Image (cartoon, rainbow, N blue to C red; front, side, top):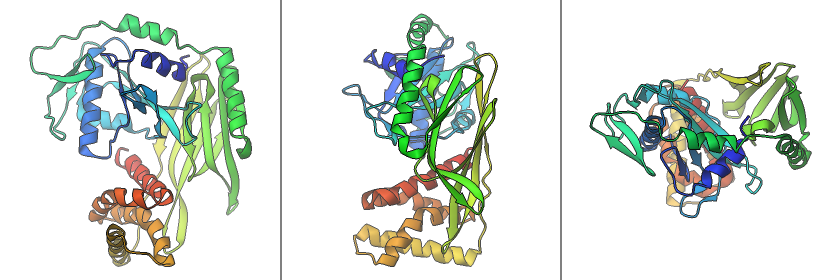
Length: 379
């Protein structure tokens, strides 16, 4: 089993990007431009490596090759995005890899790309941003370039990629160190661990709370120690955890409502199933059913949100009540959008820089709302 932290270190040892890996400071798939650029790199790496894995490392200062980290990204539906826009799409896996020097809320993103059929060329299925349907991309050194002539897939990286992966294999020392580090870092949140199928070591922690006779956990951190992968992390969510000898189940809830009448709605269920032959699978299912409200009430809230954002844009002072309402803006814009007020999505996206400047707390709530939207959109 590959230790993903070691893999990233070994990839970064090749200081310049190549035809089998790329590094980014961050990605943004919430905009058309961000989606297009991400899909271009996926397409190019898939075509340039038909017989082996290729990788994108996210959270690296390209100029100095320093690991700076990015926010935890738990969108299990990223494969759906790739399938929607690419012909002959590769298999995509996005993983969150913790590093000791990063803060708890930062990880390094690792995207693994594996072509399904080494004989098939991956191309754009339809137009997106300034790229046209039918475009084909390849890697030329560190650049993802379009190709407009006859294409022949060649294999020149399998040997070096296999060598890098072989040098990134896990061992018992790394596993034990990972368990001890997790237990020490999460000592305030009731950390525990379990070995599944005599091989897989999972650690998790969280603050336990009882709401209406239902047990939830907040500040949940879940890691698969063998691979040094953070499977789940949030300081905001309410989460149910269940496990037996063969599987580990996570049910995530979101707290939504209007006028203080909030309810916990199930968002997503993730089941990690461990096999007998050192294999495991992760399956996710969206459970979210958006709450429905009276349209007249929602239009009033929508207009009130717009007024708050205009005051924020102009730098006007807020009353205590308005500051409280400001915290609800991301979630209520989201509710308006889910109830058919399409303009609420435009307003929510436009609010990003204003909320970022206002406070970390409100911006965190904005990111939470966008995460819910992203999961619902690509399911």
